[in-house]
Image (cartoon, rainbow, N blue to C red):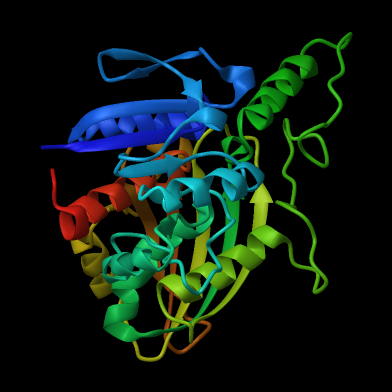
Length: 340
């Protein structure tokens, strides 16, 4: 016996990935509904070898459905997620709307699976920010061994993190570079993204950080440990898919780089590719389409007493969004609903 599953926002980048991953991982689905806004109503999407026609989110009745994976913005989520939850359908939400609600669990299954039982408070589970998700997968096993005091992270985030519009803008601007008669002004991003990097993701806050940077701080504390200090600089780069992060970690006690490497090799969801030779690391183009979070460049930081540096790469549409949501669904089914 399987589950009745809804994918909300099925025509977007993340929604389509959710459908792909549900099929790839053979999630026990008895029935699946693909929902979209009215402007995308009737669009066909694929689920394994099946073709589904999207239904109208506005009129959909969530009664009798087991879980709904939401891949729409916060505004639409604010309207429809409570309706689904009230109808008894467990919501797994990819937006930022519920991440900071103390009554709603924020889950990365490799890190805090025990938090799944908190869904009962509001029948909603939050999926973390894409940049946070991959980082905490690497931090948690190291924290369990040596306790992390402080993290300094610089991110190199692909344009797919901003949706299809961001990918289109990079593509159009790149073509325009080679066609001097064409000019594509920035719309999705604050400056030209083609052949450039932009040290701003989301809006600025009063302390000079951006909201993306703030998200990484708050979410890491909620998922791993509230005592960890985090400072982040988040940068948009001209890469289509795959977020990269340079992470500096300071521990309470000494952790040797070889032991850190061994811990990460054994940790769930991680693939260590760390050869000290040309090309002996993973770049974002190599991680696209993969489930794993890749760790490379593991080395001691000699400038502090107990420090490790590492390079972390993951497909942001997968582990940073759709994959993590499906993993939460798997955890929910395994630990709570127990139908599949």
